[in-house]
Length: 208
Image (cartoon, rainbow, N blue to C red; front, side, top):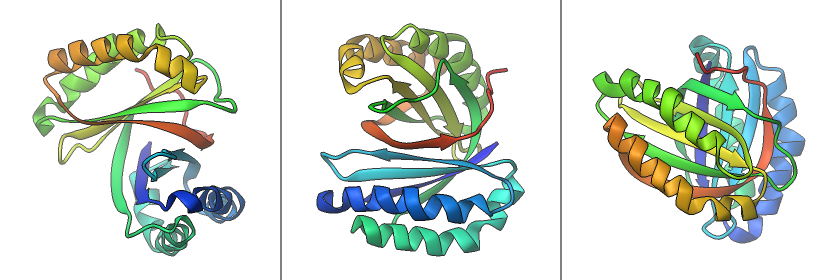
């Protein structure tokens, strides 16, 4: 499974219009594309950072969608009142759901980097150490790890039932992050917390 993420710096006053456009227009346009398996949208209403992620059955399907997706993305940027998006492509290395997202679900995303030759080892530690640790955090809903095997960059996203649960588990999560990233030999480059505005990914369980 593969994914393409588009990070948009939105105008705060345009976020709700952008969410509505993604829900009412983009979803139906993407549904007709071969190999498309879903869409998620993360929103930070304080900073304006919004991240739309589409998932695809194969790398070929993701590549073949580029032309059609570009015009959709450009219109989404307009609706969010943002500038040119940062577009990144990923291999979905891990996905685990304890239960489906519900209204109010929030996400803590962690961006990391390592050398490409250390990436498989880091994925193994994520599966065996980080994932069980996250499952023990209050309000845990799901977790995913997306990686770029060329650059060694990765992003881990853990979702929780509410902003309150995510706030209460923040210290425990920080301790887990420090210990597992040290063990994996990866550098944390960014941490963000978001509202899960849209959750329509149909990616199957990927933990083995």
